[in-house]
Image 1 (tube, one colour):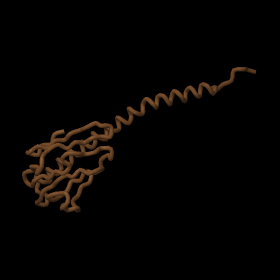
Image 2 (tube, rainbow, N blue to C red):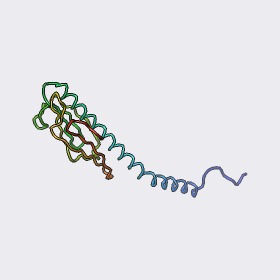
Image 3 (cartoon, rainbow, N blue to C red):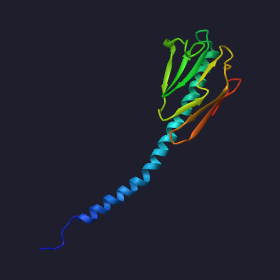
Image 4 (cartoon, one colour):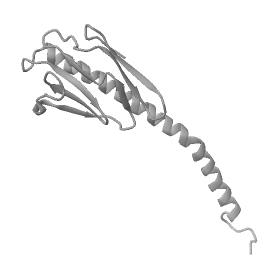
Length: 146
C-alpha cells in the first residue's frame, strides 16, 4: 500500500484561499474606480447627446416651440416647452443615468426655435462618487463642448 495519498492537504487549501482573498482585496478598489469612471463617461455622453437632440428639435421647429433638457438625479429629460415646469409631458424623452453621478451648474437648458440658440449658457459639471469631474459647456451659439 502506498503511503502517499492523492489530494490536497488542509494547509494547501487554506493557502489557496488566502491567496485568492489577497488578489480580490487588491483588485476590488480598481474595479470600483473603473465602474465609477465608466458611469461618469456614459452620463457625459448621454447629456451631450440629449443637448444635441433638443437643439435639433428646436431648429426644426418641431411643434413650433422651444425644446430643452433638464438634468435630474438619475435622469435626463428632453422636453418640449419654454421651461421644464410648464412643459408638455406627453413629449418627454427620459434617459437614465447612474445615481452615482451628480449634476451641478447649468441643469436646465432651453434652445430657441429655428435658431437653436440656448436661452442660458454655461457649464454642466458631472461629478462621480469618487470625485472625478467631467464638464460640458454650452456657448451662445449653442455649441456643445465636452
